[in-house]
Length: 268
Image (cartoon, rainbow, N blue to C red; front, side, top):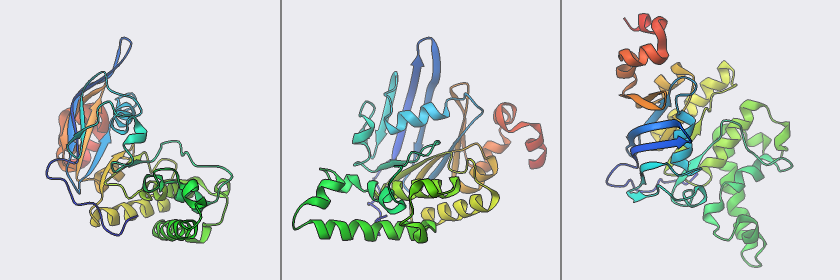
């Protein structure tokens, strides 16, 4: 994690305009528009099959949309592949954690620094005079991130020895290693116990305080409502609400589609 964040762009950090994604005759994302301002934490929620994960994949460049536009820091990235977006300042985690078995916790975090090494991290480490400097720099940054997520004492452990909660923290540390302007977390609280969820919430609150912009896809309503400035709610591929947690929790369409009568009664 860089000590200072990149200066905020003048306009929205991320903007989706009328994005559509079709798979044959199925419309998975239907005319979705929203934006993330610099320093904003936005949640993306909805019932299963609402189109959240597909929207997340479109933002991160896993696939291009059928139609519509996506802008990041003012640049059109609609059809740019995923590997070109990380150097621009995007970083993501995955719902199913994707880390490198056989490597240590620290080595996995160091792999997230690849945007800083255009020819690759390991070739940079092997260059004669630069080897020691690159190695020391990447280890220092990696340890700082592991300390931030509370896993500095597991730096030398093999990744396969960690619990699910610890793996999610390593995944976040690896994403932060690139020094992103936008951190995108795909169901970061999934499978965590109450203590781990509270720890995650505290960590995200600290990142927000430091000015980190984030997009969170999550099923845990309480987690999203407490962590986010604004929330987009999707249902059946379309956006049905976009506002503050208080606003969307009172929205009748959201209550009917997702939150349910029990949650609605609690807000009265």
